[in-house]
Structure formats: C-alpha cells, structure tokens
Length: 502
Image (cartoon, rainbow, N blue to C red; front, side, top):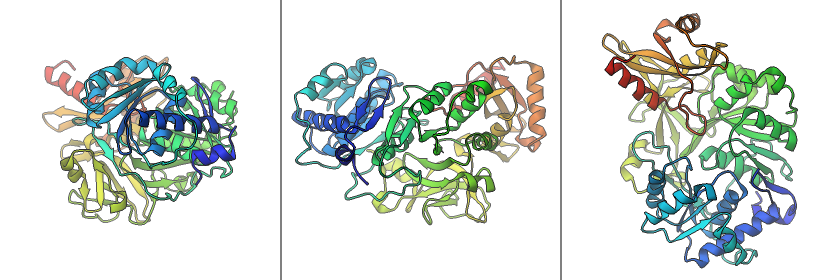
C-alpha cells in the first residue's frame, strides 16, 4: 500500500490530519516529517536510536511518528497522564536519546530527560520544535531507514515494560478489512489517545495507509464525537465499549439530532463488550460494527456484525489458521468448550520481546504461543469467546466466577451508568461477589436500589454469579482509554473489609 510520501505525491492537498490544534495535508505532513527526521539526525541521532514522545492528539504527534518511521528511530509514545517520576522511568528504560513534548507536558518531559543518562535532546512543540524544522530541508531523505514503535504495557502488575519488535523489512502485506477506499478520501475519527496501541494502529497507521484523513479528538465526549462524524463526513472510527455505553446513554433527541449516515465501519475492542450494548449499537447504526481481539503484543481475531448476531458474544474466529488456541497453564490445547487461557501465536518473524526483560518474555511464551492472562473458550465451530481476565477471576466456594458476565447483565438495568464486579474476601466462601455501581445520572443510590439490582441479576444469571452486595460510587476509576481499574477497586474494598469499614 502507498506510504504517506506516496499519498503526498498522489493527493498533496488532501487532508491527512484534522484536529482542534491544527490540520495537515498529506504534502505538509510529508514535508514536516522529512524536516524532523533531518533535525534529529543533525543532533546526533542515528538509525536504531530511541525517541520518546509526550504529546496530545495533534498534528505534531503524527509528524513525529512519520519521522521515526523513515529515519530508523525506535519511537516510544508515553501516556501523558503519568507523573514525572513514571514518565522518567520510561524515558530511561527505553533509552531515549531525544524527548519531544507539547507545551502542556514540557515540564514533565524536561524532568524525565534530565533524569536519564542517555537523553541528550529536548524539543518542545510551539517553541524549539518549530525552530528545528525551519532549519531543515523538506526534501525526501536520501537514505531512509525503517523505524519502529515500542509501546509500554499498562503496568497493572509491577513496572510497565516495552513491547519490542525489530523494524519490518520489505513491504508488509495488508488486508483491507475496513473497506477503505483505496483511492483515498475516507475519514477516520480517532476517539482515543494516540499513545495507546489500538488508536495508534487502527485510527492512525491504517487510515493513513489508505489515504484517509485522521480526525483527532483531544478527549472523549459522546455528543462531540457525533458532531464530528456529521461535520467531517466520517466513514470509519474505532471505539471501546465504554464509549458505546456513553453514546447509548445520550438522550434520544440528542443522539438522533446528528447525521451519522456517512459511517461505513465502526471497529471496537480493548475490553469485553456486553451483548446488550453491542446489539443496541448494531440496531442503531446497522451492520457496520466490527470487533477484534488483540493486544499490544499481537492480533487474535475479528468478527463482523452479521456473524456476531448469529453468535452473540463471540470475538470471532482466529485471524489466521492456528492463530489462537485455548489451553492450560503449560500451553497444552484444551478441548472445545472448555475454559482456559487464551494464547496467540507469534511465529519467529513476528515474535516480540519485553525490552530488557528476558524473564518476563519467557513467562508469557509457550513455544510459538503467548498468553496475556485472558480467559475464554472456543466453541465447536471455532468461534472464540472471552470470559474475563485471569486477574479478575472470582473464586467463591471453589467455583470460578467471571465478573464480566455479571457486569454485562447489570448494565442492562436502567439505573446503572456503569459497573465493576469484583471479589472480596469472605470467611465462609473465600470470596463473595461485590458489584460497585456508578448510577446513571439522576438516579439516587439506596439500599432499595441495591436489593433491586441483586434481584434483577438473579432473574438472569445463576445465583452464585450474582452480587451478594452492591456498593455505589460517584465515579468508577478508569484508565484514559475507558477501561475500569478493577485492581484499584479490589484493593480498596478488600482493605475496607479488613478494617471493618464496609
């Protein structure tokens, strides 16, 4: 498929990036990427060196990505919600020789760079970044080299680790699953922060490959997303299930006031999607909703709307034969229908390592397959179903309970804005099921509502899967990509139970 440079020749004046902080045509993006590549090389960086980026969703983020890809740099985008100490750890660990930051994150970036022995270059967007570009030629590089990105895992246990792959050599085959117009002209709404793997891949890299403009949101807002779809004639987007829930929670008159008929492909993943929520999205938008199962480390499966409606709850069949298996802890494949760990295949050519951590790399691999701790099963027809993550598993009276199933049922209740089901210690049962509920706007929490939710759940699930207790909170703790921090809730409520405060 064409590169950004090729699109700059074919469609120089076509929009490549549209954002609140600035736009770029393909020609402008290509020129600035060439300038930045030269600016970093003139400051001593060579192919294989690392660059760290702390930047919101703006055109400069895309320029840095493009510069790294053509100058042979290893780029690490950093979650800009991190503290200075957390960012400094990643800058040092990825061995960045240069840090680029926008002005809101410049102070954190400067501290991180100063704390790292290898960091020699600091560029601030809005200041030294533009000066650096102005001093360089916009011509194509005489000696381009393939670069790569190294994203860091979320670090739910211990320090985050970089997921490292060598740069790709030669042309990478692509399959146009999203049905992009291969002559360019489509528009993709990027709803999440680009430092995350899914938005970076599905909302930036893939659209630009097909000559589509990336319409960037700086932060998520349901009504604003609909407005942007209408204003820009958005054809594609990527979301997470929490965003679906927020869209469906909009008043009908608000949701129906926007024209979203331009949409042809809505891709979602990153977290389990309740069956009821996804069915309502398909009823609203039509059979244009696709789901994938993947992670920073690799891709597993895809499923379209029609197939999903025939197999509700599936995340599809493996992307390639033998790409996914369900097995036990030693990697031995389990019979169809049995719940176990989900393994993805990473043959030698695609194998990743956790940067500078051979032990962690070895801990997730079983031969060519690796697991991230997701739990699920494969049905007789070869469709994969996820039940939860092993870290979220509740064991009550010796019985395994997967809280995602309970969450899915409770989200169907009109009083529930969002919910996280967790296990808390119990002397008799080992653990009992606790539902932590964020009420829908305008709903008052009460003991009567808690009893109603427990009863609602028991009408739809086996009783052992239902909450024994319901607690209400104003806001559930979330990561910036919409995922709920269940670990924080478990720590909080287990601590409160030990103290007798709940």
